[in-house]
Length: 224
Image 1 (cartoon, one colour):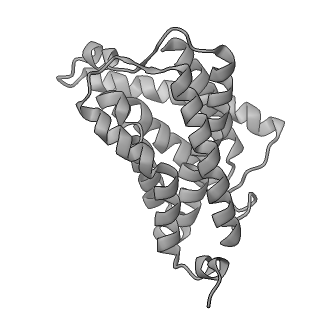
Image 2 (spheres, one colour):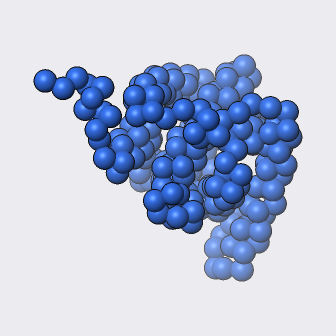
């Protein structure tokens, strides 16, 4: 009788990809889709919600790290190396993202879209959020998302399907679990997925994406 490790090692690459993406983002995508029918602009980010996100992502990460370790994935394979240069590039990437988002919003203004109505739908904090929790949740979430939606997903798809297929799939997954933000997600998350995905696919360096994402979450929670 085969052991669990042997069964996992023998999984086809396509099955591995579905397991990882659904394990990491299946529940967030499901709850995000369910939220589409809910009133917009309400307080979504609270201390309890952030704690729940941290616990969920840590537990899921433990299982996925073990699963991918059995599948012979390593930190080197996804390009995760912490260094000062990557940190500085992360800050630059954040600024580039803000610039790209402005371009997307300017383009949206040329369409019959009420931008004020869209921005009013962005989820808010409840006003009593812990600053310490903001930093912890931002750090955990930034690492979790970029490791799996960029580092893993693009690496797994790029060689077999090509760079742009990998970037587009990664971006689509990223948008789907942010649908709770409403239509504005297409103006903020889509450019993030495309820019981060392109930078990662070309450089194979994950740390700048993590730095930019953590800073983006911190700023976003403070502004919300």
